[in-house]
Length: 326
Ligand code: AMP
Ligand code: MG
Image (tube, rainbow, N blue to C red):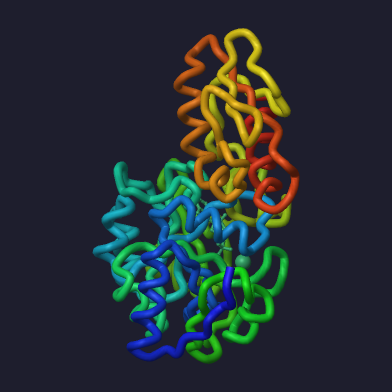
């Protein structure tokens, strides 16, 4: 791709950034916490490119950023408590994990196939202006290569991602510098702090009028770089097909649906041309489609995917799908 453009945080720069995003481009922008790497959250390919640009080795779910509560309610189901929190802390550094509505058009890569979605309305005026100009949800993890320190200045973004994204909107240094607080609800309805961040635990407890459970709900947790205690994102709840899954397949066995890649033709293909960004963009759709085609008696076989670039995240996801079930 071409050089990464540095856009000024004025009307022309914001309009240019929104145009790039509408074309499926990636644009980093300031929020009050850190710089986010934005892409259209409804565009599978744009979201796949976020993982590629960051070099993330796994498809952990991303936060969808919105201009206001009304837009957030189009994506997720808010109950009274969620609305109370939104009214008190949005715009601001709070992310709410809520039940995903059906038919939102959100990319399955944003939710990692989960039935919940992480939502945030940032307070930074440049982020708000960009979200209004763009008009849709932006998936936006921190704008740094995976495993590196989060960026709080446009120059940090350029140091890590120059040449890998279309543009960065330079809005000066970020004020908070730590990530957003993530709050979710347990199946029994109890609120849970999934990640500490810019909004204090005590402020959330005061607003809810009750203490928060702390840490991930399940025993198995992960981050973008590997397993870690007290981090959000439950391994067990990630979408897994019902049918057994076999990897490194070059031909279909009896009763198997073969998912091809590149030269290995299948009943379905992740990418006929061997394009890893396309394969990542297709992955969650293909998992569901193959599961559907395999039916209750069948199985799924996946062609080999190269263990490089986005192929590492794809293989990570496929290895989980193929792992023995409890
Ligand atoms: P980042 O994109 O680096 O800001 O990180 C986003 C964080 O939100 C990750 O740690 C995710 O695991 C977490 N997250 C996003 N969506 C969900 C969800 N549906 N359930 C639980 N955690 C989530
Ligand atoms: Mg990060």
